[in-house]
Length: 197
Image 1 (cartoon, rainbow, N blue to C red):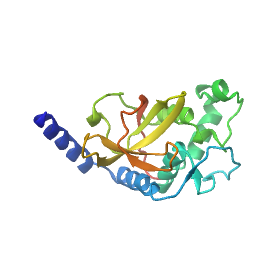
Image 2 (image 1 turned 180 degrees about the vertical axis):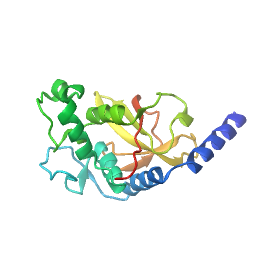
Image 3 (image 1 turned 180 degrees about the horizontal axis):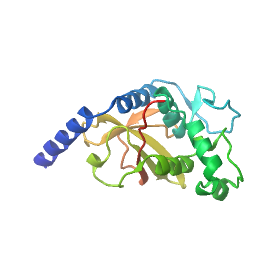
């Protein structure tokens, strides 16, 4: 067990040391989200396009991801909408929500749509029960009880007890930095770090 801990720490050190500028900024932006007082609210809002956002005092798990990427110059609202306009049938909006066309007010705020987008434009990573498989900047999706999809960002901070990478997410109490990677069934593991726009 002692050797495993040492190996894990070495992997963590090199993974953190090799982070690119966009990864570092994304992680900093995600951790910064935990400083904001956010009421959990996933209600539908008409928002500007592109670079639209719901009121800054509300949000859900996807808004943590959207706002973190915005800080590094990546507008997921626009990117998801543009991809859905060209490839609507590849997204679950028709099957899950009964939609017949993209909606830039909400599509990017739905975990299943983000899963398709990150699968198409990022890289799908193997789902693993090993903490070292999840590197800072990765995105993880889970299925919560009640079949509720969830998403969070892997950070470069690690739990002192479990040694798991800490996750920034909003599960209902506002954005938090938490050791929860293996608390729920993982349904997706992605890497999406394009060059800054």
